[in-house]
Amino acid sequence: MLIRIKKLDMPPLVIICSMSGVLIAIIYIVMFFIQMFNINTLEMPFTAYLLIFPLNYILCSIRAVIDIFKKYKEKDLKPKEYKNKFLNTCSKIICNVYNWPILAIIFVVPFIIVLISILLLFGQRPDEAIKAFLETSDWTLSAKTSPPDIVYDGHYLCTVSLRGHENLVKPLRMGIRKGEKIVVNRQLCVANAFEDLIYEKTPRFHHFVRHVYDKYGFPLSKYITTPIKADITYILMKPLEWIFLITLYLFDKKPENRIATQYIGKRWEN
Image 1: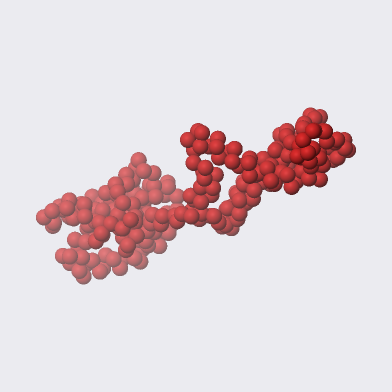
Image 2: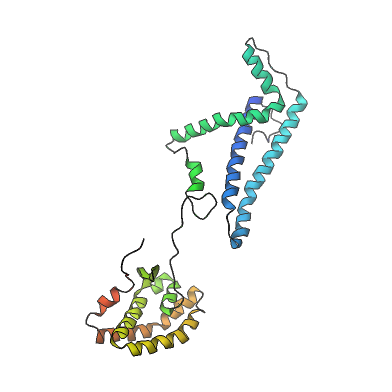
């Protein structure tokens, strides 16, 4: 901000410190670019939008530094005279505009020390800026791994219906199917308990039911692509759910136990 105010005359040391701050910001932005580089094709437009402001900052900063060079080069700054030889040498170095980029790089170190001291003073950890890149997942500099996705198995109408609105389909808990975590609700547990019962009591009839469902139910489930369609599926499945429930209560000694133990799995996998 200071180096962009062209009408303001500033001491060379203030300009050098400002340039050091700009350099630190540019380094941080470059890290941001590297972090965002690992993207999917579908995310590219959104990511490109996020990079507009940082890129604009770098371009504006470079232009401001060039302008400040031109301004102070024309002034031909004269070093102050000191009795101390060391101070005279420092004054000559600082008043030479061509030394400013090197001095700005050198001043980055004390500038960072000041920033770390401020962070420590206010109870923050010095590595917070770095952790913002590392404690993420699925990006270039990420040090974390994303948890596996929760599965909504599209082969089953009752499972697909769980994609509907929560206040209607009422998900109960997590479950395990074929080693994968899935969301289950009462309707899904009842349907699976019914299938478990007929498989146990009448395997041939179960084979017939499974054949019919695989032939007609699975193709139908592919069209359930929105929450509204899932809500409708859930409602249409309600009469079948009641039939399944009546069957369970008629032929199973402990129907609720069978329902409650669906999708438990041999062990819970974190």
